[in-house]
Length: 324
Image (tube, rainbow, N blue to C red):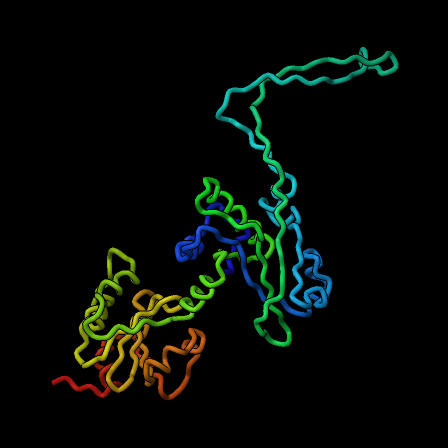
């Protein structure tokens, strides 16, 4: 999962949600990234101990310790950390200094002891955690390869230090790659989660599920504009026959749709949308389209109905529905 920031003060909500989907008690911090062959050849990844594509052959695993220049967590990982305990009383600390007699070293030197109250300190030893890299089997373009990068030591959720250890590991990976994620130590569970993530639409036949509550969850606002309220009412109880509602999930989580008996799909975004979209496709074909394919779609079987004053009339005209 890609994030803009280089370092987290707390675990991002997206990653907490990802963690909540994992049932296993042990997890691994891991991510996958695509890199260009040109960058690899130019030596951009020598800091990861990758000198050429040959280093990744035969599913080889390469280990490296991130440079302390990558970020604050990477520095702590390499050199440790000094913590000033400002909540505890100060303690006297003494040290010696040597100086010239009467300001002239030719007359000899003397040693003086200076004592001052200072804050107590605690020292955190370097963790020296390695990141591991291997090339995945996923086929990319001829100009790119995909790498999996992870921390081999599993984290146990039942340990008291788990939240801190998880944040540390996520930051270590994020600072080096700009990406991080959490996976189960069970490959079977990971495969199942990946399969579920690939599902973008949930079909709800008429009479199943509270559509209005799903819309309100997506809107997530206490005050709903009158124009949005009108569209919510319309989608909850449309004046024409439908076979079911379509609930968007994952990359389509802000969308709600309607499916008509003839296979036509009507799609609405109650958060940021400025138009209703009509797709003249059946749900099976529609559900296989990625978000990118849907957004870029320009064809005669797609109609856009702007949220203007006469949007209802315009929509029903496209659908061929006549009010009696």
